Image 1 (cartoon, rainbow, N blue to C red):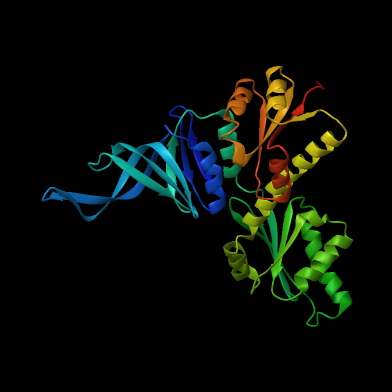
Image 2 (image 1 turned 90 degrees about the vertical axis):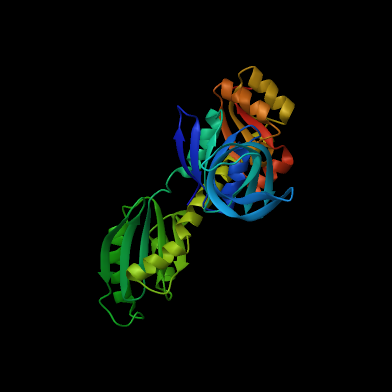
Length: 331
């Protein structure tokens, strides 16, 4: 899953749970010096002996720090700051290590675009239809906030090489899923899932909606294996990347035909100041550099679209300019 976010607008606090390393990069965009971070952590217990501090153990505490330094570690963010509050008597400085599985509360003057970006990551993935199948049976589920078993279909044959019986089996499955317009995941042991994928293509089901994965069992055991493999999370990530790639492609198409776009800091800022910008595009790795531009866009209620450089299209955008905009009108 993505970052889980619960935002309290009145207190300007966001409770965030990190699930994977990619989300640390998103989080790093929003935490700055002066922000307040609250988390459960471990702190060394010290005593003074012969005028020297000696560590005598560790305590689990809940602490709030005011951030003064942010360090990117391997699969972690290290946040160092002065202790503001603590569940046990503690003072001085402390570092909070944020890694997958961590839950923190971030209190700051949140910008609209920051909250929108976090909420984008916290949205539950769109529902998907999962068909866990082999040559003899197919179990169909709808997976979203909860899992609903839709139907079980059993093949009328014992020999999968019988093309007429195979076609009947596939047709029965298709009759159940043909009205589904979302993502379809085909999984199971053997080759039936690949053959059924070809069957769907012959029925003009869009290739981009169908994903295939291998699991060792059919039924609920196969579904559990599919969920453990995080296939649905990978599909959701691919969808997000696909959207970003689509926006980047449109951006470069507009440049090629001298259309309604600008790029580079000065040209983007100039367009923004005269109210010509419809949507501003910024590479995620340059958010801090162009924070002043984003803050102006925030004041002018301009749409902000952040583009990750974790895929080829995003990397191309980053190296070409890193910042640009679609315009309302030509300038």
